[in-house]
Amino acid sequence: MQVTYWLEHAWIDPAVESGVVVEVAADGRISAVRTGVEAPPPGATALRGLTVPGLANAHSHAFHRALRSHVQVGSGTFWTWRDTMYSYADRLTPDTYHALARAVYAEMALTGITTVGEFHYLHHAPGGTRYADPNAMGEALIAAAAEAGIRITLLDTAYVSSGFGKAPDEHQQRFSDGTTEAWAERASLLKDRDHAKIGAAVHSVRAVPAGQLSTVAEWAQSRDAALHVHLSEQVAENEACLAAHGCTPTQLLAEHGVLGERTVGVHNTHMTDEDIALLGNSRTGTCMCPTTERDLADGIGPAVALQKAGSPLSLGSDSHAVIDLFEEARAMELNERLRTQTRGHWTAAALLRAATADGHAALGWDDAGRIETGNFADLVTVALDSVRTAGPVAGLGAEIAVFAASGADVKHTVVGGKHVVRDGRHELVGDVAEALAASIGALRA
Image (cartoon, rainbow, N blue to C red; front, top):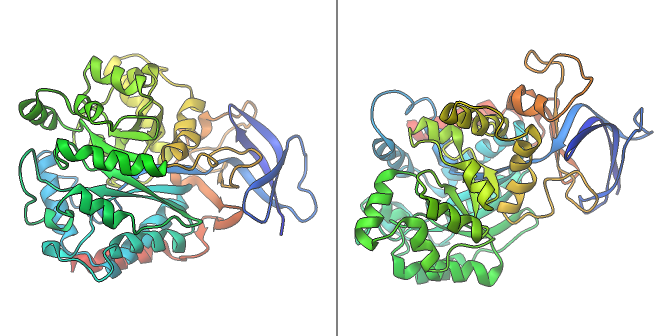
């Protein structure tokens, strides 16, 4: 059955058009786009405001949402924050993880996120005991995304050591399959679905021994799957890699065949000029997570230099200190202004592209993130009459979304032609705040 939407204003990269009709085929893809239609055609659903393509959250750890407001104060570093994070990881079961992730993904939908890349390393029971279904935790996440009405790329993560030459500690036993060969055997049991793709991840060069990196890379390459890796997030990681291997983490990944067009380095914060060149020349992507990087005091990565070198940019909310892709997009620009004391490093359209088409490409959804024929009909409508966005609509551009709006201004989220959020309310989950409170409360009890 065909569905028709009339968009009062729509960002069709690189400009905003008014009076846009989007026709959606039965498979959830856009079958036609027409501009300059002054009023909604008969039977069309009107989306009033500024509609942009669905947003892609390219880096998520769903269970970190439970830490929000509990880890933002006090002194310390990433490493002390990690201890608190581990204590929450220890409490999760497949059922409680499903409930939490369902609520978190619903929160994402409320802010216009239509696809999430879940960097998933919480595989087993405490102590490393295997569940009867070895992918019970991953399946819980896939089901949670479906129930929240969004797509997911499950980036099943190899994590077999706690550091260079060190066995997993008591907390990390849940993450480890023992070897990457055992990881590949388990990950191969996971299957794509209409709303889900299975990708791979190297947690970090400290968590996967150098001699086992190629196993993960070859697994992903054989499936043409997305492959992500936490890369140079902290100076300490770089120093440890130099001590163990005499090279940077980026150089180590290059030596073992991990870099490439389907690979994305997450954070890429502390890069040498050679690192930047290696990523750019191999077309390896960069996922920046500015709200987490500032929350954890990690630093400001060289996003401008990476993009100029040839590394496509995407965005993620990572630890979910904030879930708002508009904030991630503008934070990337504003961070660069602070670092350089100059303005205007990206256009608003370029920042929005990182949050839409390029973010989807980083997750293997090359047919999403654009309002054009053949793409999935993923639409996000931002109100133009909130206290943040109110003003003249003449000359409307991507700037209103990137530099004025927040996730709270999202009125409608449509995924594959189906309304998931309507007038600010989630159609499937209902009271998302209540679902978050219940699932997080169960972990903190």
